[in-house]
Length: 163
Image (cartoon, rainbow, N blue to C red; front, top):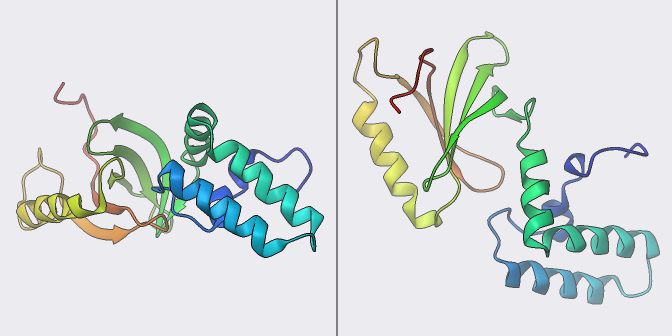
């Protein structure tokens, strides 16, 4: 890691061996378990684990960190995230582009609810899979993100939102 690199470039979730969907209690337990496993053998690793815990254990700093991680340029599968379009109770929606084709897509991420609710996103994808109309996005694929969340990739329709 280069000096002065953004904290978003560091994967604190991976370092603590937890999912980005992990509850605060899980993050705390992982931190304690890792410190115990490391012992006094590696001061550098202890420092990095403590730094990760410091960021992820605070609601405000974790929200800032998550926002930085989701910033434009992130590659998800074969797509490059360009910008966040919206956020709601279900999760977030992003404008992205296919990395090889350069074609715009819309990615809906089921990130703010329990993993059990993935079924809702799957049903949405099934409902729109065979629909074809210029005003309805075409479902391109459904994929699992590295953090475990489910994502629906659709065609991007430019213009104003329904709101």
